[in-house]
Image 1 (cartoon, rainbow, N blue to C red):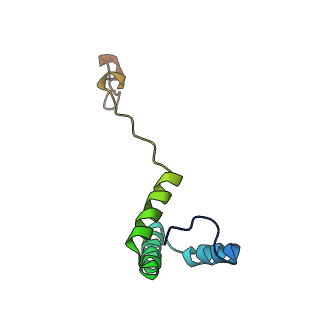
Image 2 (cartoon, helix red, strand yellow; image 1 turned 90 degrees about the horizontal axis):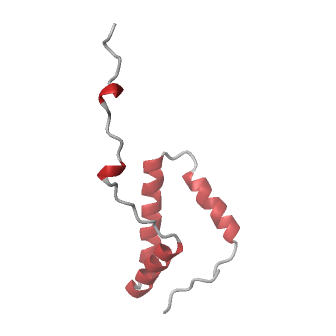
Image 3 (spheres, rainbow, N blue to C red; image 1 turned 180 degrees about the vertical axis):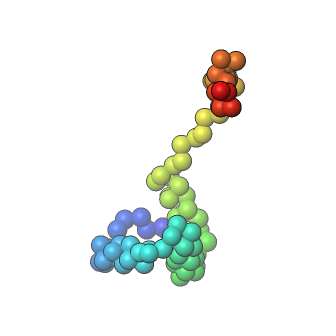
Length: 90
């Protein structure tokens, strides 16, 4: 069974509203935990490793994380002797 990526469920807007409602009042950690439980329940329902791996790949392609640029030591402004904090000086 190939991964279905075209809209394939009825009442999508209603489901989205229910999903938002399920997150209402949750802090960030509880929201992430809820999402993890939901994903695992749906993955169990699908039950096909090949389809789940295709879904992971499709989700990663849909919103790729930009690479983090390394910080070069030359780009960091080092403090100069005149930059000392005046704290403690009268």
